[in-house]
Image (cartoon, rainbow, N blue to C red; front, side, top):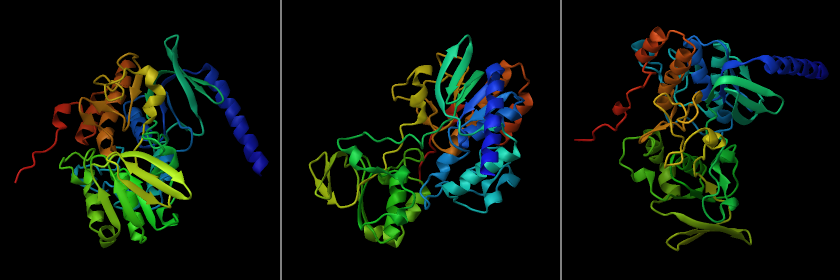
Length: 392
């Protein structure tokens, strides 16, 4: 049976290779996570039919790789009946809370949700297809993969961040373990942990370790738990603040704000963490690095101009300013000082990209845009993205 399955897969690969040698897609979406699946659904709603989604692994694989205990910090609620889209939804009229019956889903649960959406909307997805390079040739994008070349008039880069952790940030970073590589915090051995980075993933790790009775010290160069901003891209979420009130957190976690790390060394079974102000801390456990992610946009940096902050410079349609037809979706999207790093933020730009592509193919988009605006999924006025006024 195994040989028969392999033979069938080989035959399908041969057929797809032969088709790809001749076919030109209107759009290829790279990445089948929340951004890739979401913008694919929007693209289909806009009337575009000749498109393909490719992913180097499987649908939702980054979410499936989350530590087992980690959950969404944004709550899901089935509020569609009153015209308010579930915060964790990536498609109009869809509520993860309604289908999963979970308020704060795990990564594994959300990966299954994305696969369900891909099946329901019959998205043309090709998994296990690693894009090695993207170049413009003869007015078409050529995407080189492990097996063949894909060609398209437009490309949407939606590969996300989770598979690209930020690692080399100080001397001795290689002695640390990034939180994205942890399968389950409850399985980590030892009783004394140092976590470098105090934003969401750092506090999440500290919370779960503390619940297991572990002693934890968290170091951050600023201190998000002290930030008064209302922007969840800068300050901690209310979900994290709520969990910090758990008795085990107060008993077992020590927070060090404004304490950047200078170096980490390892000798004689001891990890030594030195701060920039000269303090030295020791632990027998490999320090956990909760330093965030470099982002997959670095892979296609040659196709975009770079902003001062290192992120791609985009037009008002989230298109490259130097290469028409090259679009960006997902957590790496930036406009002025606005950071679209959460699902409920960057999903509002899916229809912007879909409309741009549909219009370039002379497809009518008025009804499509109106439908997405009604669901709060079409954000073209960035002047409304500021923080609310915090007054008493």
